[in-house]
Amino acid sequence: MAKIQDDIATEKAAHEAELRTLNRPTIRDGASTPWGMAQVSRQFADCVVLHSTASHGGLHLDENANTTVHTLYRNENGFYEEDCEWAKIAHAFPHLFTNYERRLADRTLRDHYPDAYERVMGVILNGDQSHMRDRQQFERYRNDWVVISALNSDHHPDFVERIATLGGVRGEAG
Image (cartoon, rainbow, N blue to C red; front, side, top):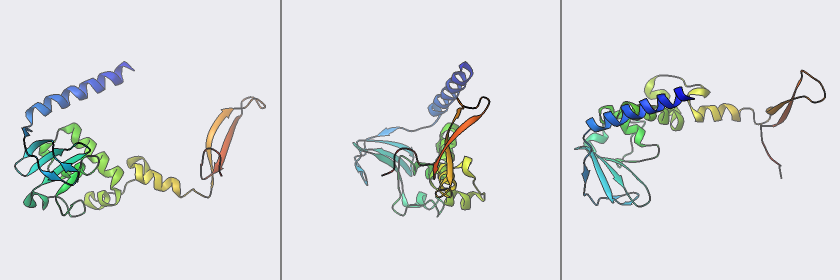
């Protein structure tokens, strides 16, 4: 357990050190965004601004910068929300993000945009490389019996009993 905590602490320290080298000044922008009026904005580059609103936020690219985003990831209005779409910007402008952020972006793109990711990167993702691909694989077994639990048998020593349901559905149906 200490090793995992050490790894996390080391990664956090490296991320914080790298963040200090990036120039992301706070600007008073008050921009109108798809999420409302920006309360705080950080300039990642002349052409890339992160806006935070009372309810949500995201990145905005100017028209020229937006053409840098791969067409399969591009939003025509240049706005990219902060939960998932930010990863599209990290892919297009990796120099504006830390190593840690780039790793998160890669995972986010694989998890939320696997079709686009496969085409952009020229790879085929399997289930353990993308939550969405994993879910799609699981859904293929919707009409099959899927083991959802296993326990040591009280009736037959050295045996394991299994509980299976159609499609792996848990809980009461109805």
